[in-house]
Length: 66
Image (spheres, rainbow, N blue to C red):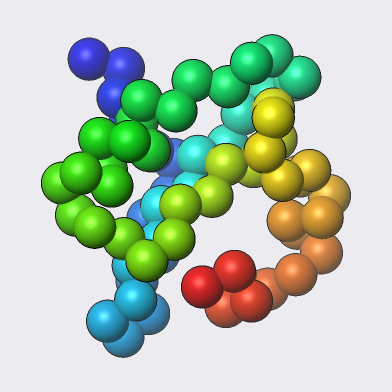
């Protein structure tokens, strides 16, 4: 039902969901909300759109975001 996340990262017991949005359109977070309710991740990230600028996200290794 269009509730999805783009990436799931697991490192040991730490779980993170990443949603990537293109453009500056108001970002819909229903996929992140559904993932958080189902799996209780330590971190949710929105990259692009109204979230973290994509350049800033790509400059750092994924482990820095965990």
